[in-house]
Length: 462
Image (cartoon, helix red, strand yellow):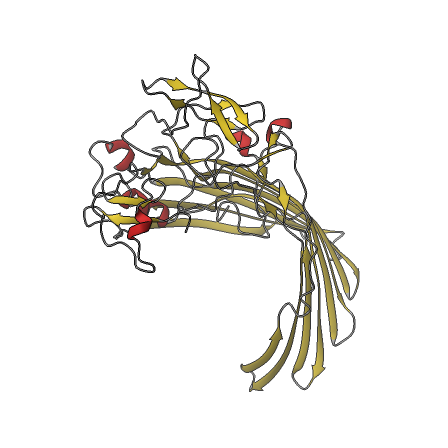
């Protein structure tokens, strides 16, 4: 075992979280026909989220541990139109735009209650390796073993200005009837989301950004003087610290508040953008057979894809968040599917779906604290003399073929019973692993980021 970690109760309250969030909403919507060809719809939705407040804040840090902000200003206007070109129903233009918000889940707030510098102690073999001699797998420790050193406690909190995510979405599509049995739809969707949640450690001094792009946080000497990084050892993958006399100084995490470890603050500062172009062709081949083809070409960028992570702080540099701007982890450049349904008669139908997409981005990490910030989940490798981009590699593409045979039994005009046999990933072909290197973030100007409608909206999942 390389490392063991465990949280234990220090005052009997850790692990117990009993609180309630209140969600309130009201909306109004209407549609009306402007002309025989043009229909407009619109609406306004309001939502408010009342959050629980910590019952046992840390008296040394009352601002950090004593308040979780509410969000009562989630106003969401929407508008849409449908225009029948020529009035014959063969060509229809549809457009819509609106603001959408998402709630912040309670599990992010739980840690403000239970991890406030009072309620927990952390056992970590990185701090005291003698834990391994006392550990009896699979049994966990029920209390703090005598003589064991524990890491300095960390704090989880919310920024007082925290707000729920807001997403602005606009789309336009043109539907064209080619003949009585065939319809084609071409569309474009733009989604820009801001106020996305990300957690940042704010108990750090500003780092030195080395020529290879790696941000390294300062260490300190025996007298407590801050010593910035002066170089990088490519052989060991570790930064180099030298004092004014040119002597090497050991790396140690040095914090503005030495009485605390990480001060992890949930902030609503991340951003994402999505642009997607789609085409869909649907055709009834005969009375019994219908088929469809769909294809999407899209770009999805953001500067944080943590999916409201419960535990990790993935930002490589909390003082320069643009260095994390890259393709989102759910970025899919090409995706498409082919589907058909055939009526065999006597209540039997057979259907099939073939789906394929290109690979998702992969974030490379080294699993060691090369930045001297007490965090091992944000350290990216140095490749070809530059820190790797957050999305430096791509997973293999994905192909799937699903089949279904269905039998329907009707009982009168209103009751139907269906039995089906289904097969998923029927061919399971081998996939060829490939990689795609992105330029390091410092070597290009990173555009603003986003989410894909094909996956949860950045406001709902990031």
